[in-house]
Image (cartoon, rainbow, N blue to C red; front, side):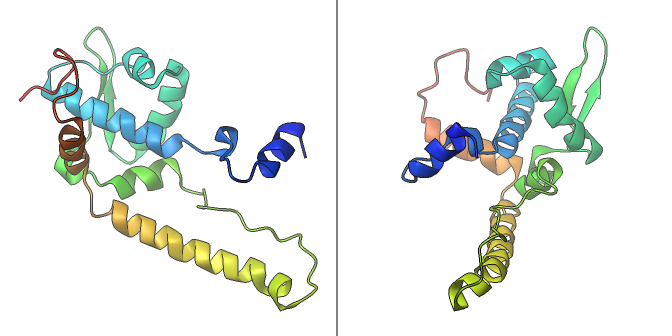
Length: 171
């Protein structure tokens, strides 16, 4: 184990940000930004989206690739190029975005290297795997009920007019 991993493990009350996977939340922000930009007749380029994420354009392109494969986003090249939604925001569900960018990622990992010394350690891996599958199904169920359009509406409600003029969504 690295010193950082040990430090994060010892600080169990804290969540180590290096261990957290942010692909879904970043992809979600990209999709919502593209949707709002479309409403505002604003282009969504890799550079512009990267600036919103405080990331490199190469990360945006990496996240966008599986979204394009699933027709969630489409792109065009050239002076007027950029990304746009592959279908209406009300027809894109958050579960699709999750599955596109996290196809093989489990909600949590199960340790299989614990010595089987009692009924707990002998069965913990199997039970934890089962519980993880149930949690993932619950997550996908929740995300499957919310569209990108729903997400935009919720963000507008949460914002409550706090966003400075010029940075709001066009009516």
